[in-house]
Length: 165
Length: 352
Image (cartoon, rainbow over all chains, first blue to last red; front, side, top):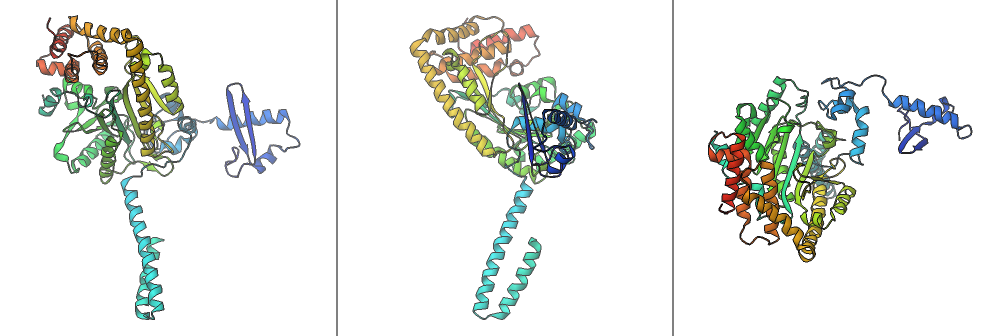
């Protein structure tokens, strides 16, 4: 899990706030906790309150996020719950995260991929299979002392390895 | 009128057929895949020329399909209101989902599937079937998705899957929607349990077309909500097994109604029959509602003299554009109501 303040380091302190219907969760890394003066010893009610309000401010974007391609902004998105283009998913990710989380628990796509991808994957699998076959042949040739054929196979394996990588 | 649309307007709605799996409870199955073209603004925010470009690209891709001879493509702007209404009534596109001009529609000859272009997303591939036919409809969509993807580059990201105009569709872009008749559960007062169970299992069960004249609703849409983090077939399997359970409960409830409160069922069905039998003027919503109630009556064996075929016919011609098509005229609302009343009575074979 990533720190909510710097967005870089792994979070080590998890703070959950449950007030009535409202639930919020913040995660902070070691470094940011140091800056905020947070440690298990001095974790007092006031520091927590301050931290939570600070974090809330971080979460609420001060400036309106706007898509660099189609110009849809976070306000427009909230109103229509529709994005204007594929780029919005990157540029408006902050305001969209909530909407997506509410919809479905798990985030990663596991369904179909476009045909092109499937095709590329199939040919990749085929090449890998070929490679294994060639390697087996090579071993056989070496044990049968057919060095000329082995050299040829070695070169083919080399080429295939390069294309695969 | 366009020849194909004319034929369409004179044939019964294919998704109402009774000879389909589990059609006693599930009236129709609808699957929809949402796709967008990479690097293009989505229809709601795109300029006219961009939308036109998308429309042309998708029409072009559809012409490369092996069955292109059986496909009919329409630019909706070029159709008359009546022609558009026919397509709308056959649920080949939904007028509320259209943002502006440059919208298109590609329909397969037998209405096996259709592509709606520039509605909410660039492309909606949809398949409509009678009864419960999730797998069958999915096979059609899967094939079309692969074929079209050879000519169109869809907006896709590894993490989020297929990107769509609504974040609720992101991932698979697949929505399945079943129209179910839960009259038995409504009459035995168990519908609350079904609503709750659906919610818990991640489906939504919503009432079909809310109209004020009918306070009690018997037909519902059961739709899937999950598009992210789950495979297409997984969702469809879950829906299929849930709707099978739901249908079993519904059929038990119907048997209970017949055994314990037969008058409840008789009352609602006979009222519907009375309305259709004796009305002089009737509007579309009321006619459709009454006919679907009658369908339930036939299902329960309460009306020996009526058949499903008659009801299918009557339903088709109680839809305004289909009725206008048969009458070959542009009638005023009141004349249309009168014509509808007569047409329904004719198909139900009752004299007046």
